Length: 565
Image 1: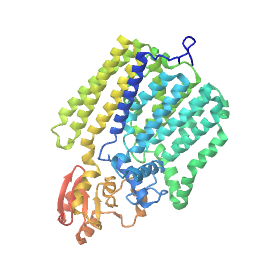
Image 2 (image 1 turned 120 degrees about the horizontal axis):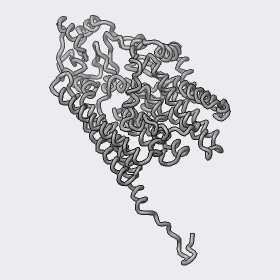
Image 3 (image 1 turned 180 degrees about the horizontal axis):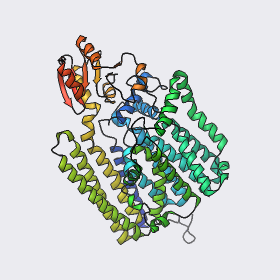
Image 4 (image 1 turned 60 degrees about the vertical axis):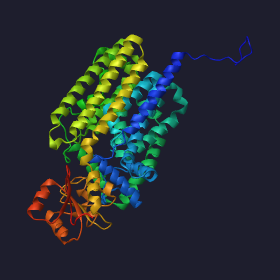
């Protein structure tokens, strides 16, 4: 464009404060990304989940069988294969390392954050999208779960993507011309959620949609979700694996669909039931450092609620997920993760709409809560520093104390920016960055507790006594990650764990049912190594079992049949 006066190009002057804000956003994003990656860099795979799922993916890659999941060579049908596929592919590209075993969850977390940012931006504007993304990415439960190698974050991420597609397709007028394509993206995301963890990938969204339509009294929504082509896409993407694995292993259907879904939901078969209200503190603590944004007051509720259909949809999502898992007889903290993306959108809207003074009050509450939490964690660390059984816990608690202190400082800084300079963005930036840095420090410090209880130190002690044909045993205890570090199967002795025994006959020779059977094999073997838990070790010592002690760990005694070379 030419100037009417000089004929020279017209240059648009960008205000200095806008340039600085853009540079600050870029810097914060880079630092946030560094912290996100650093959270993966822990060597010891946590037991039982990290060790279990890392090993299933390793065996899938090593065997070349991408249909049948196996754990220590035994059939393992607890979960569908998408997490294993993604992790095995990452192993092929980057190597079989603990941080690579966590990579799928970290990438899935970034997908959920991006989906929430996109949906918030399209429906409510830049501020809500940005705030919702920062809240989700720096909240305790979500950030930690994205750096722990479990399957829960994967299903939550694909459900978040499906929810985001629905929100944009239904409530963003500018997307009307692309609704069919966005709807098909939603159905594809739900299919991947099914391949991540089973039927909840469609059951939860279906229940949310039913509650929303009843609340809204609008059944015409079904005509706006591309129902028929969407169901076809869902089946095309998700059904082939279920069909093929059932064809190869007919026992899969009853175990996976009946036991793992209905029996676990309706009964306490796996002893995972919790007291009533278990998920309420999990959600409130899991949202920290953003818990103070939850609308406990009328002002906070007004900042979130406008009576619009999208509000009802997100509230229905939060309510359905919370109630569904609360009435289940199988409850673990990470199960509630599908609630967090919808909650982040609602809280992001609150943060964008609250006046500076009101948001400052919430930041002040956060600063005090974090400071009190830091003091409590430090006191607990000091109390446990002389307990040998709690070795590593003082370091882990010290890391938590430091993390909360950082968040307290950041929340205090945010309060000042809001009260003196009325800078919403700077306040949110500061607390979000402190949140992810803090949880990363907590994760890294937790290795002092998790690492000695993983398979890594066991494998390190066994290494000098191992040859290609040395038999390896786990007696009384089951450290799921040990085969991962040894890169070989282990013979299990006297175990009744629910993730092992259902298909114990699928690996002949890989299981010894009694200590007596182990003793007989050990005495007649020229060599061997074993991890023996304390109870079994006491019995074996009474029986004068011949062995050389290689070391003692929190997981048990590491012994060899012959001296280490």
